[in-house]
Image (tube, rainbow, N blue to C red; front, side, top):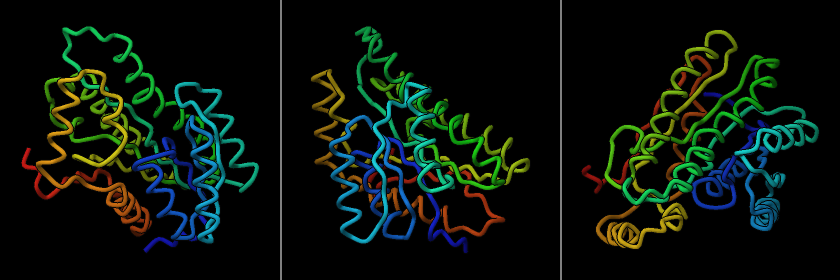
Length: 249
């Protein structure tokens, strides 16, 4: 089993949901966590909570769509803690709508955050991981990266891109640089993703769905990440498809 205590992680989208839950779990396991998101007030509150529980964390106001912002945050973590061992690309948006609604601005924002954000953060962290010849990158895809759902077409496209990028990244940096890559593909999870839905009909559908099954918690995904992190160095958990027991689709 890999010893993860004292490792340094950078988590994007860390101000809520899966990102915040993962930050708490990793910090409790002895990992130093860099918390990256746009909402600095929430990050500062989470840093204080982690510190009160005996963990170590740093707050990093970050826009993942901006390569310079990503690079600056990475440099801050390395300056304070000496390295980055783990990257968790968790930042994402999911505003549902039909294609013929032509919510082009929402499409572009999803591409910018869900795809470009992953690329920007990965590009910022890779030089450090390559130099130390070790690291673990987690990319948050979705069931929507494996199956297409109406109303989620553009979101599905972005998450399919994340899954494809993850597999190619794993094949390239694993053998060459000893860097592991894991693609997490959750089903329905309680999070703030649904608050981005501006289409009233689809928002109601998601609210109704939450009453018909027990959604996963952010902690469930955090535990999944910890499982892959603790795997022996010889073992790369490449993909993890994690669904609520009641989710039959």
